[in-house]
Length: 190
Image (cartoon, rainbow, N blue to C red; front, side, top):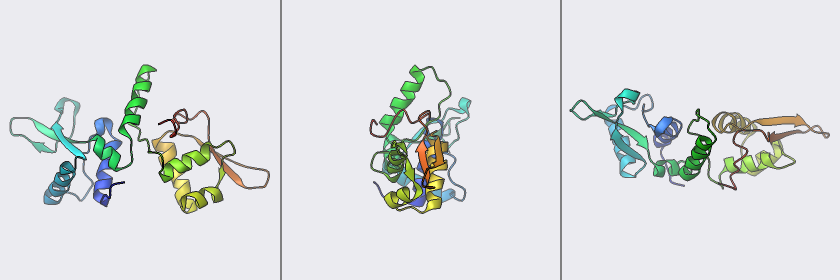
């Protein structure tokens, strides 16, 4: 995966979660010459693209062009790949939701196979589920990081429902509920 600065990661991740992958507004504290330098580097690397802003839709402006129009910044497919999101899988899921007649769809990030998040999903999709100790051993994360990933990345961003129950030996086992929104598309299929 590409080595990104913290600022680049924040800009790309925030843009990937917005409609039409709009990269604005930039993080607080990033303004003026520093913002221009960071954005220009990202444009040079192909991670961001400057496009005409649609003022009727209220798209934020990056710069004014002087003729009453302006431009905004969008995260490109290369930018999505740089943060581990597969744009082809995202486009396929959007198309599937549109065919199914769903009108409220956010641009959900989908992680590539081989990441720790993909490993976590695979562990939780196993028929036996996974204990906290198993997840910690597989990912190298601490328990609070695992809980945060299950709640934030899996629950809030991917729409997966993670359940837990104490088994016969007293250990808590975590599983992805079969009825979860994203559980129909496993990372192996993507």
